[in-house]
Image 1: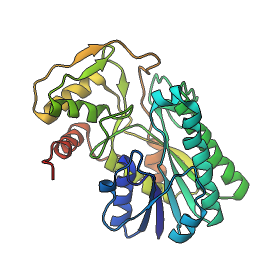
Image 2: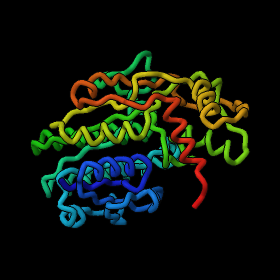
Image 3: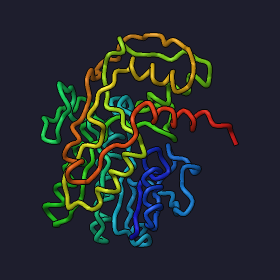
Image 4: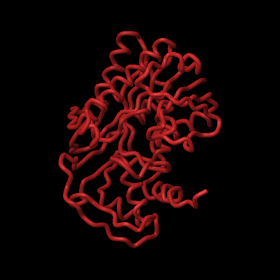
Length: 303
């Protein structure tokens, strides 16, 4: 099997590439390296520097892709609010470019979407059928891209799959930006700066380990269409997360509280029973162990 991974030099994409290589795939990574890093590209994968907003047909033809794992994205909620046009160019128009090239070569697309930014506030673990209430351009662009996948399935009889991720953490996560709270805490420990918790810290998220997400993503290639949540089904407050991060790093540092950020969700958690049933997948890494592994990677000696 031959696979293309867009965004494969990034955080989650590189973990997907690892799983694919371990399973014997030929892997081509497409990444413009604006946020991805060359050092994240695993041995055995081929890197093509390209932007998904540009035509991809020649790249997909050369790769001979059977399946495309589409993880290249604009992921910063704050940037999406400040520049919704750029957000849509990457997340909507870029996805259409991927779909067009995949259609031309008969490849299936597995798309990385988002749970929290699409469902909005949760009163309990949200199933895939839950009402969709994005409150940011980012969530709206991801939902729009999901709808394009579904439309291509109806129009062309393809079997593209969308995956709504929880809050993914793990080795290679960037400590800068919207999505990296675990890496941000750990980076503060390393730098000797004071971590910030916005609001009272009781807001909850569904934290899922990157390696588990990568396994679910690859497993989705065997499905013929559909939308699946990928998380743990468990809520963890920021206060609880911070305590676990301190334990993992073996530090005794108190965080400071800052004013709550406008528009921040108070509860975000996804129901993963459909993925467990259809993908034969469930998360294996419990949070404390995953945080210890993440700290070991972040605190490793520089080479």
